[in-house]
Each structure stands twice: as C-alpha cells, then as structure tokens.
Amino acid sequence: MSAQPILTQDVVGLTKAEPVSRRGFMTASAAAAAGYTLAAGPVRADVIKTDTNGLTVGDVKIKVADGEMPGYFARPAGVNNPPVVLVAMEIFGLHEYVKDVTRRLAKLGAFAVAPDYYFRKGDLTKITDMPQVLAIVNAKPDAELLSDLDSTVAWAKSQGGDTSRLGIIGFCRGGRTVWEYAAHNAALKAGVSFYGPPVDPPNPAWPKSPTQLAPEMKAPVLGLYGEADTGIPVATVETLKASLAEYKKTAEFKVYPGAPHGFHADYRASYRKEAAEDAWNRMQAWFKKYGVLS
Image (cartoon, rainbow, N blue to C red; front, side, top):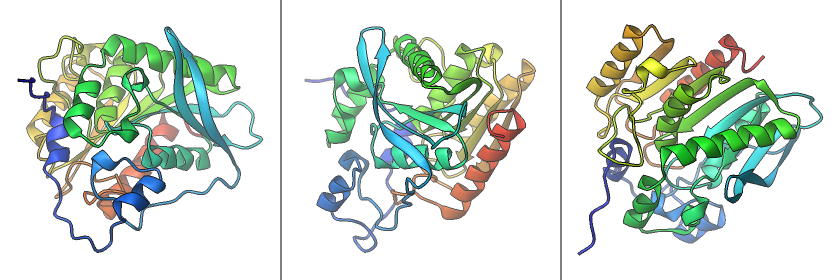
C-alpha cells in the first residue's frame, strides 16, 4: 500500500475547494489549450491576460548544478539594468497564471523570472493526479531549491539584470519559498509571500520552517494571508509575526477578512478580486520602499 502524501498547510487550503458551477469556467480542453494546469481544478473564463506589448518575454534554460532548468522570463524591452524579481510558483508548475504574473511584474519595470525548479521529476503542468503532484513537490529538498534560485539570480545578472535590486514574490508553496529565501540570501532586498505556510509538517527535506527561520531572516518580507484559509490558521501567522518581532526582523502582515487560500489566483474559484488587487498594490509599495522597484 502506498504512503499517503503529506498534506501541508498550503495544500489543505487548496483541497478544500470553493464551490463552483460550470458557468463562468473554461472547459478542461480550453484550459489546457490556454496553458493552465489541470490538477488545479476548473479554470475561470475571465482570467487576467497580460499582453507582451513593450516587453521581451520567452522560455529559457538556466544552468544549475546538475543540468539545465527551464524557466520563463519577462522584462521591459530596451531597458538597461532592470531590477530582478524571482517568481516562486505554486505546486502546479510553470503554467499560464505564473507566466502572466511574470509579465505583470515586467510591466512594472522588473526583469521577472519564474524558474521551473521541479523539472527534475517531470512537468507538473501535465500531471492531473494531485497525489502525484504532492509526491514531487514534497520531495524537493530546500538545499536544492535555494541553489536553483541562486542559479536563477546568476542567470538574470548575466542577462543584464540589476541583482543589487533583487526581490522575490511567491504564491502558496512559493510563498513558503519566499520566507526560506529571505533567510538564505543576504543580497535580497525584499520579499512578498502570498499565503506561504509558516509551519511545515515533519519532512527531512525541509530542515526549518519559516517560523523556525525567524532569527535568520536577512530581508524584509510582506506576508499576505486569507483569514478564511482552511489550511493556514491565522494563529500560525500571528506566531510567525511574533517570532520575527522578537528577533527584530522587518516584516509586515495583512490578513484579508473572509479571503480563502489562493485569493490572488485569478484562474481559480478561490479568487477574490478586492483582496487580490489590494495585495498587488501592497506588493508594489513594499518593493518600492525597499529599493527593488523604482
């Protein structure tokens, strides 16, 4: 009998799905054709679509310790030394929502890069079975993850990005990645975590949870959470906040009343327009305050 996958806090929030009717959602074939991951469930028909006008965008191969990692980038066309923002994806792989967020950041003046750091185990965008997805993402060692992100920064620098103005943004599991990277890279100027779990289940691949890393934080982080997130109790967010304050680390938190997990994910039923737009504005202000965006 196979072992049950670990249900981390972010995944609990995802698996307790929002009630949906088929009205207002794409068919599965249309969603797949548009580049969305089928494992994420029904895709809203009125997703946000960011054009490439004024941008240079594309797929890329990033040199990592054991080969080449796929990624997607977007940057303002003809702009020298743009700031670099890493985009840490959810558990569903490098699909269209992540790419669109990358383009949105480029429209703000950033050289945004989304690395596909689960590539060694397969293309998550092609997997429909959630237990199979979880088996892959839960096995990703933090040491390898952080190394992959460092390689992404090095690649962006080699392409003319200004890594002295380095930021990171992440969603769901990628929100956890933001906290982890903020404790790892002293060159990071700021991070923004959208509903990243403050606490991890026991996992030998993950030595320390974000809360345990509070004393090691090297960059200011903005944490954006949903009060109705069934997987991330507000109490765990408050504990992380208190730990950061205890060690005199710079962080701010916003908990959106009634918002579920994935409230920024405009392709999912969990999307909450008001919270998502407010959070995006706070992200911009945070990055400007700490010198990532000008």
